[in-house]
Image 1: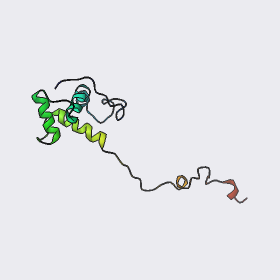
Image 2: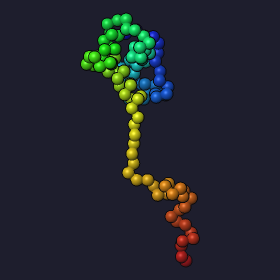
Image 3: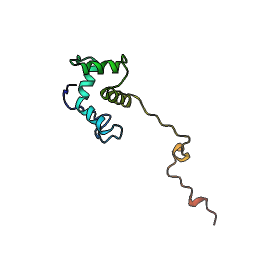
Image 4: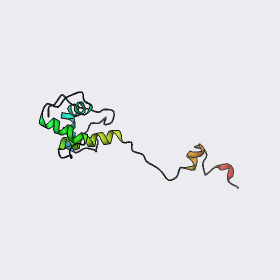
Length: 113
């Protein structure tokens, strides 16, 4: 696959692909070296010139099973950048919910002497 230039995604991975904890070292290198080409192939702004690029496009589009490391890596990148991660909690702090951050349990006016 040809390399059009280094690929960076500062919005989703501001510290780089290597330091994100999402990608392996080899996946991070594939994204950096061939990410621009893979993006251009998938969005249609670049036509495949080699057999490797045509096979990559067929695997990403679902025409073939994913066997190449390029297609697996790009699929992982797309899934990590498009799927939102939601986290749910079971309860919320009463103090935070009421907005009473200044109220303390040890208020001196409630103590009988």
